Image (tube, rainbow, N blue to C red; front, side, top):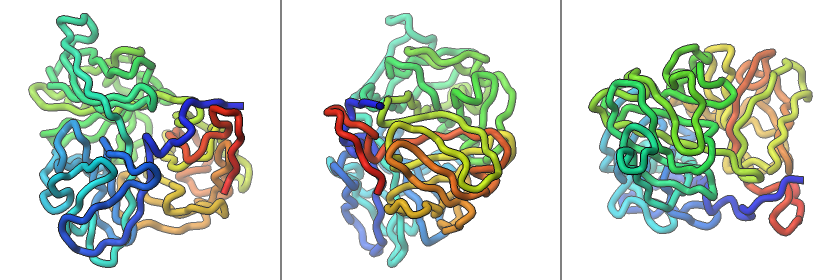
Length: 352
């Protein structure tokens, strides 16, 4: 059985849903513990607005889009001063976050501790980096100024990251994804859905417990550009970053996580298919989760039985056969917990 030190995952990750009311300075309280988010990703469920990603390292009302390669932009009527509250966010009237009668979801991660590394002083990495990190939850947000050459950058996790998202903040570059199960020679793109592609963006080098490696390619280390990376390590009972083989057979694939998932990202790495996002916020009951959003598309959510799956107390059982989740191909995934399968006191959890 999988034991964990994280009995309440909502301290570090939570899904939050609401219906817009088109009023300024509205407080949205993060579900669960009501933590202050350091990465706040919002998507309209019932409309075709873009995905918007905010974080406390780049700036409180400055957005990136998971479905576009655009440079970051200020969004004055999305997050409002004081922006990130101790238990949530303050929102405005923008249709991407609070249009009247439209429904929304936010995926929120907490870091909580400032981080900085002077590479010349510490001899860790070759470029100075700074951001926020939570070693307990295996998550850091790291910024640096690109230098256009091979480099190593400190991530602060004290563990090997298994997934990293890279974005140039000021240039129209795709969001490159390192995933341990596509390896250090291949990358995917969060905003395009391309198949895993062979390229030396990571210097064909696996991240270590202290640094990750980048080449001089603009997407991961654009010269004289501010860069951002979101880094995740696995934490038993709380997060799992892995792979599985699709079988194109109903009711056949099981993915063991060691917890009941709160959110899961899927990507077919053999084909150019969309990143698919499933979560227990929009599908709270274990009756065939099939309500999807696509990370690289601005579509409204779709309830489709071809995507049906069950969120179990210890993993996921695929029920559908859609090519995005269960073709005879290789898939990568990243998942975070609603409940650990067995908590720190040895008490087992149940599926809903």
